[in-house]
Amino acid sequence: GINAEYMGRLNNLMLKQAVQFKHGSQRLVEQAARGFAGLFSKRKPTKKDLQKYDLIVVGGNLGAILSRHIEDFTKKSPLKIMVVFDNLTNQQWSMRQIYEQQLASKTDYLPNTKLGINMMSAHSDGIGLDKVIPNENAIVLKNGRRIEYEQLVLAPGIQDQVDAIPGLEEGWRDMEAPVFIPKDHPSWRVTQHKYPRYIYNFTSGDAYFCIPPYPFRGEVAAYNFFVTHDVWSWSKLNGRLSPKHTFTIINANDRFVQHLDVADNFIKEEIKKRGINVEYGLNLVEVDNKSRTLTFENVNNGQRESRPFSNLYALPPTRPHNFLVDSGLATKESNYLLDVDPYTLQHRRYKNIWGLGDVNNVPTTKTFWGGFHQLHVVRNNVLRTAHGQSLNAHYSGYSKSPLYLKQANMTYVVHYYNQRTSFINLLDSRGGIISGLRYMWWTSRQKKEFLDFYLRKSWGPPFYKVKRIFRELPEGAGEGSRPDTPVYPMAGKLLGTV
Image (cartoon, rainbow, N blue to C red; front, top):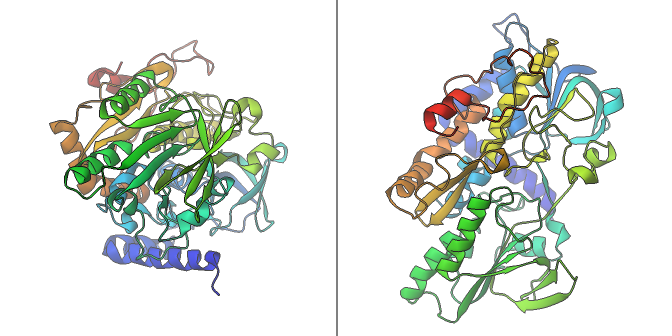
């Protein structure tokens, strides 16, 4: 008689306690610091019940980290900051495949949202955003509370819509059904581990990996089909997997990487080389868990067909945030994503509203690393605006995502706007020593590095232990100027990316 929502909240509470227990004094000290913030300081924490804040940040992932960065940059003249979030944990999409191989724990993969929020900032205690009223510089929370702002940063990510495909949520939730997506269901207990079964429990039948129409979360980072093929090839040789099985990638688009041709071509060539079946222009529209059948729709003519399945991994489709569409901040012309300047990340119409992360309509791959590079730009431009200065930080379109090649090898897809690549893009894509060492790093040290981002023990990419600052624009260059080089010119020259 206990409903799924209650179980989800109970599991999140248990997960939070497990996180604190596992990481010991480091996290306990962090929690204690929140409780005693301001006790031995002249400055007191920002109150949660103010009617107006200097800055409201919406989003508990990159938004929470942004609050820490801004607080650290403004200690002498702090801003009153409110962080609005409704996600109790943050899933690390870049680590999903490490997690599915059970080489990262649930507590590493799902850090608690409040760990990222600066102890001096106010927050909404898990009450999410309902409306944005940009003409009045105000927002409304889901409990009806109205709050005004001087500046607003929107970093809610893009919203999965699992229920858009009938049967998908049911199969995903069911611990026994061979239906998987790159997320943990909120009703699962902390001790339940369904996610490795897609790769390691498959023994026969027809397996599918499905990609929805753009935009979606997990582009490149969630592509586990090379790892899957590698493991299943070994299983077939050892008699664990029946030779009478099929593996097919269903891609509703005609590309795997929307904004980088060289990476898209590499993935297509690897799929062909490894003999993996792939079909384009088909969209998964229904999952029948009882009869074990999938229904696909042709995106060009609307015709539907059903196929039997024994194993399914589907990246969920997404839907626009209602508060963005209803407020006019996202339109059809902006692909129902936040309509921002791709360089300054300032909203094109409302100059005191900024975008951060996947929610932005910018022509680059949506990744955590890309969002972190955006974070520095937004932080700089928000503070410059607060002091009446011009905007001197420009986002270069930098994006970086792991691409898993085999069970223990990985490379990176790294690029800027306009198809420009980094020298580490697809480095050692043949699966040699470098890609093996990189995989070892991810399974041993990368998870701690993610935690350091949230605890502000690191400034994050690109310089990690050094604050990212921006040069003044050359004389005569206004905010409309667009540099052809990446945002990090000196580092780019040293590393050979410019």
